[in-house]
Amino acid sequence: MSEPVAPISRGPSAEETVIEWLQRNARTLTIAVVVIAVAGGGYWFYARSVQVKNESAARALNTALQSIQAGNQALAASDLQKVVDRYGDTQSGIEAGLLLAQMDFNNGKVSDGVTLLNGLTLQSSAKLDMASIYSLMGDGQMQGNKAADAAKSYQQAADASGSDADKAYQLSKAARAQLAAGDTASAAAIWQKLANDPKAQGVAAEAK
Image 1 (cartoon, helix red, strand yellow):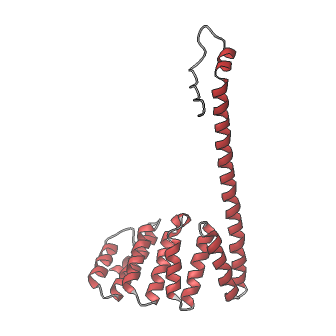
Image 2 (cartoon, helix red, strand yellow):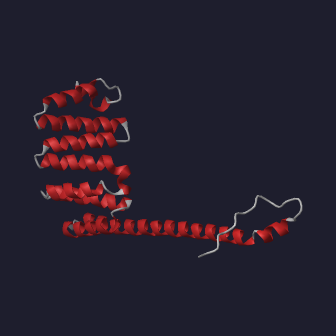
Image 3 (spheres, helix red, strand yellow):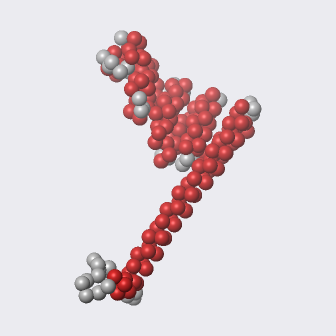
């Protein structure tokens, strides 16, 4: 059983010098310094590993983008999938996922694209891209004739939007999806809200 560490006294008493106080508390002070050093070293190692991972993810994404620019869709899809698989919890991984999902939709693989986007929403690094993810998901669901699901996705995109203009735009897409799904009451409620919202200027005319 290890010997308990004595707490450090507040300071030297009137009867002892600073040196005597340090000597008396040397063991406890040494342990405290070691703990601080280990914690600092652990944080540095973690921060450095995150930096290295982000840099590797960015390079991998750039390789995929080059494949897209070269018109090699098969290679681009393979490269993007590798970025998603290896670096899905990075910003580059989220960007790769969005691109790959769009490729799936373009190729008629709606279910694959929606599944991929659902997976992206679970990543902590997707926090800033939730509006884009849900909006693209709604587009895919509309393409797959699932208007009711699309309306929900567009509503989630609106809830995650960081600007009033984008929020209004996503709500307008939700209203169109509700109308396509036959839910005219819900569509009308959204249009009425947008028509009365001074911050929804971009879609106000359509709403009215």
